[in-house]
Length: 258
Image (cartoon, rainbow, N blue to C red):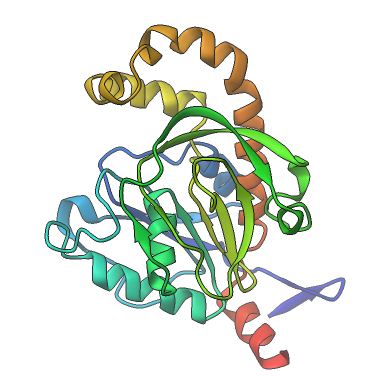
């Protein structure tokens, strides 16, 4: 372990495990932030083979992406119970964890909260309010009291015990939360920059037409008005979370000194 100006300096690139629950989900803004940090990404495409990391020792952080299933669909997605347990092990070890949309619902389940299916339907760019705790939190502190971001979900969850609510909206009270130092869930898709949204538009037109009539026809106008601000907010969130990733050696030192 090398120290620079009193802080641990990473000798090896950070390794981040990314769980892809649905084909071609896309990392968008998060990919940019991880690339800036020189991170190595290991993809686990559980929609394809159900294979998860064998343990937590090989990675400094865990990302759980979205998907069309619910966080309770164990029968049709039998890897889910093990993913829930793995998520909790990463978090309890003090490692950085990030759950996005379905990932936030899985994270909430891992920490004993309730999943509320079909209770909060949102699609498209929306404004999210930042709580007082959120304005003081590293993840959202740069965004002020409100920001625009992309949403695509029907489910939501209760706030896990001990979690801090960071952001909220009229449709989903728990838009973002933190547990401990660096375990975060975001119901909104901050990673979905304009390029990712355009990809989803091309891949899922029938679904979008059903849940958001008129959105496809108005996409260009909506993107022109809202995508720029959402992209900036998403990249700021992505960079903030990546900055919280610690190597395993640093995590152990932090735990020993706590």
